[in-house]
Image 1 (cartoon, rainbow, N blue to C red):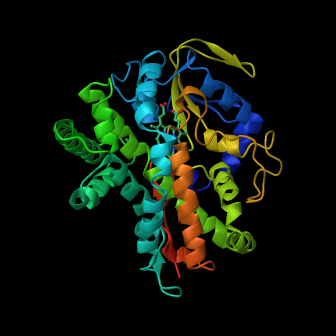
Image 2 (image 1 turned 180 degrees about the vertical axis):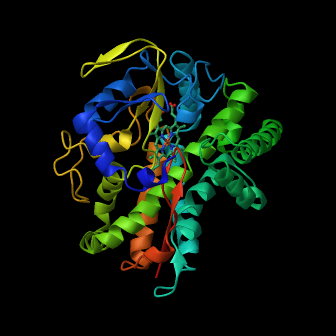
Length: 376
Ligand code: HEM
C-alpha cells in the first residue's frame, strides 16, 4: 500500500532478510518472512500457515473466509477442490491454446509500428492473458472486452483500505453474476470450453463460479505484469535482449529469471494456526503473516549475485508461483503465454526503447508491476 516501497522494495527486503528475518509490524499488526528458506518452508506448512483466513493483508482476520475459492482453503477442503479442477484444467487443454495465443499476439503486435509509440502493457501485455482467459472459459466474443474491463476494475485499490473498496467489490459482484449466467447456459448447452467441463464435474454450481472467478483474477493481471517487467528489464539489458532475439530457445529460461527477479505476485498472506518460533522470535497463533516470495527471489543465501538480472542463469527453484499444495495451478499456462508473447515481441521489434517519462507503475496490494510501458 506504500507507493514508494512498492516502487523500490529491494533495500528494505535486504534489511529484513539480514536484520529482521521475522519482521513484526506493530502498527498494521502483521509479521513478515523474507528469506527463501523460511518462505519456502512456510508455504509448504499449511497446518501452521493457513490460507483459510485470507491471503491478502487487508482481508486477513480471525474469521475464516467462507469462500469456495481453493486459494482460500486448507486441506482437506483444498485437496477436494484442486483434484476436481485438475481434471478439467489440464496441461493438454492449456497446450492446445498455443496457436490461439500466437494469433492473438500477432494481431495485437501488428498495430505496433517500430519507431512509433506503443503501450506494450495496455495494448498488449494486459490484453493477451485476458483474451486467452476469456477464450479458455468460453466467454462469447462479443462480451470479451467488457469482461476484461470488469476484471481490471477488481484490482482497484484506494489509500489505506487497499482492495477493500466499493469499486473493486462492485466489479467482483458483476463478474460473479456474469459467470453464474454463463455457467447456467453451458449446463443447458455444453460446449468444449472449460466452464462446460466444470459444470460436468462434482463441484456445485457455486464452486464452479468461484473457481472461474479465481482463474479470472489469478490468471490475468499476473501475466500482464510479467510482460511489463520483461519490456522494461530487457530494455535495460539490450545485450540480453539481442541474445534472446537471436536464439528464442533461451526464452523459457528468461521467463524463469523474470519471475525470480520481479515476481508479479510478491506477497502471500497467511494466518497462523499455532505458535511458531523462528530466528528467536515467536509468532503467536492467530497472527497475520506475509510470505514475501519476491524477497525470496532476491535472497543471496539462495541465488548468487541475486540482484543481477541474467537470462542465462540456471535456476533450480523459485517461489514466484508459490510452493506446496497451492502451487500456481496456471503455471504451465503462464509460462506458455509468456514464452509465446515474449518471442513474438522480440521477433516484431527486438530493439524497442522504453519512454520512462510516459511509463507508469500500477499499485495494487496483490500484483506488482506496470500499468503503462510506452515504447517506440
Ligand atoms: C506470471 C503469472 C503468474 C504468477 C506469478 C502466479 C503466481 C501465483 C502464486 C504465487 C500462487 C500461490 C498463492 C498462494 O500460495 O497463496 C498462485 C496460485 C494460483 N494461481 Fe497463479 N500465477 C500466475 C499465473 C496464473 C494463471 C495464468 C492462472 C490460471 C489460468 C493462475 C491460477 C492460479 C490458481 C487457480 C491458484 C490457486 C492454486 C491453489 O490454491 O491450489 N495463475 N499463483
